[in-house]
Image (cartoon, rainbow, N blue to C red):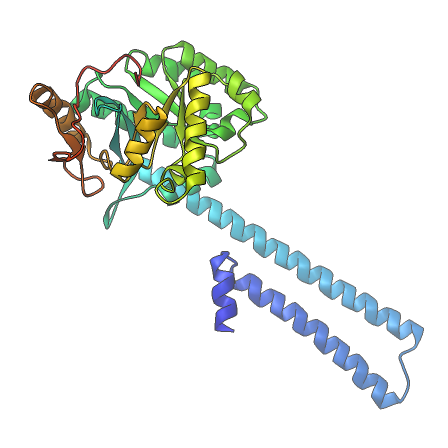
Length: 365
């Protein structure tokens, strides 16, 4: 019984629903036993009229039971929706949204920009945003959450980072659909902010999604297609998408050291991007061997723990500041051993990277 309850709990089945379903089954079994006892006592089966009455009673009992079960289910869903909504609005209201910034560099280690990654402040410190993102999607609050993320990035730019280095911000499909596009364009104009979306943005039924993305691109933002190859990839859509940069998903990149198929797949994606005149970024790089293979394949953008872990705005500014000093003296490879931690630098034994404060406009070269 404990195993059953534990299994149901994994799927968030309320205990009341389990109890009611058990009661209905027991009721049906009791009615069936009563029928058999009655027939045994009288020594003959129930008459057609009695059987009909029994069947109708059974149907009524089941109908009432399922109606009650559905009511309990709907109330549980409503309660979950309210909980999700409170969670998201509370996080936004108390300023719990913060950002970590992960560098993107070229093959020489020259800084080309950062990806802004959302983090959430909680009682136990700063943590990943998975639960908050799930609740935002459930409650339909992707738009307000994205506005809060964008506000945090703009504040970091004004206070620390400046606008000389491009920053990429992730947008969900619902956020693109719900957000005031005129406000968004006005807000990010001239800020060096790029937009990163996943493939589902181009397979949404809303025709305004592509139109909005095209407007953002026309306003000067570069569009990054994240997690390429993990969704509904179509060569036809790839040609028509208003995008500038493909990002090779980390699930492919991390397998390169161990799998020839993954190496060939990454090389094919890089060749495809080159053919379509798109920039390319490989994310999830964790080893020197992976980096070297991607360089040999012609990759132009690199992101991952091998380059640098996500870090605070102050640490990101440290990279920008140190790059100016290190460029003239041979440079250093930026590393950060702990996510969202201060910057550490360590010389590379096999290559010399230069982190520059003079990125080419918009992204990779």
